[in-house]
Image (cartoon, rainbow, N blue to C red; front, side, top):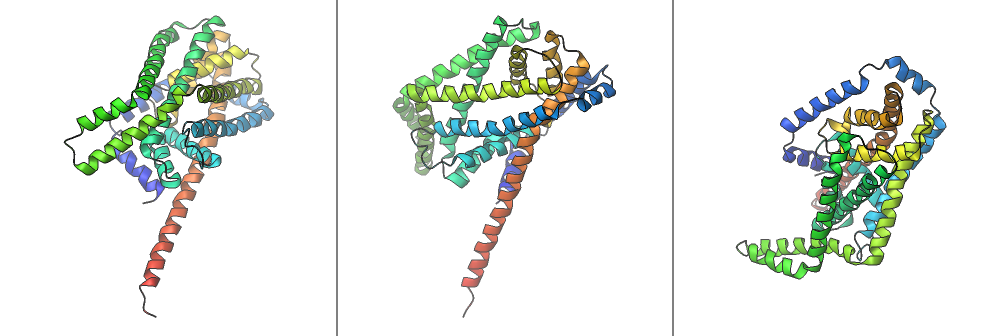
Amino acid sequence: MNLWERANGLWQQANIRGVQVVVGSVLSVVFLWLAFRDVPISQVVSAFASADYRFVTFALLLVLISPLLRAARWKLLYHPDQDGLRHHRLAIFLLTGQMLNIVVPARLGEVARIYLMGRLEGRSGARTLGTIAVEKWLDILMLLVLVLLVPLLVSFPPWFQDSRATLALFAFAFFAIALLASYSKGHLLRVVGFLFRLLPKGWRARVHRATGLALDSLDVLRSPWVGVQLQGWSLLIWGLSISINYVIFLAVGLSLPLTAAIFLLAVLQVGVAIPSAPGKVGVFHYLCVIALTPFGVEKGAALAYAVLLYFVVFAPPSILGAIFLWWETVHQDRVSLAVSGGESCSGDPD
């Protein structure tokens, strides 16, 4: 089974075609209408025509650097077993995951990363799942820093303030549970063994091993030096995202402070939780418009900015992830054909 067939099978198993997709698509249409309402298309076209595409090119280069930084952090999350992991392969897996998350509204990208790490790097799915969980917590922690920092620099709109307490509670709860699980790994494994003692012996061993590997990924939380490095990579990743927002400000001629780029990033990250059609179409654009409103940006200019930022952020991972997915599918088909051909030849008499 090639990678695309595997991904398609996982999509079918995810059972998300019903109400969730319908609701998300309706919300996307509503948000898209809200974003474009009362904005002449000619105004958006004019903003594109006058944009400085040198800044757009620079922003695209920054977007391409992002998966390299994320790959360095992801590799470190396998500590102390990161030796042998190839940095460029991890970056490709991340791009593939981002592409699937964009085109499929089911977070299928994380499933694909687990599959790719097992298939091509021989890493346990349970261990990879643990690294992704810690990675998400690191991102939530950085988002929490943003939503706590930005009010010191700019006033939050009322609709955004309510999310801070929930985000803080979730981040600290995850950290407390993960740290407790890391230090109580032996006890947890004994509990797992007790709870699954009625399973067949072969299954018990697999469940016990998978749980142990997943808990191993939490060990990085106990190492201060590794923790410092992880936070350093996270700062670089989020700093790069802020820089991309700011560079697009320059591209469309918006004279805004850096705080606007920081606030925009926080709004977009919180808005990811809103159900939508594939690619966050509509939701992304409307969030950009309402995030720039407190800074005095008129709706037409904000919408032009949103469309350009959307292209810069979503196009590179979508294209590169699709290319890798196609290449991997072709490669696996060739390997399967070669194996079947070799078996056929070996069975022929001389």
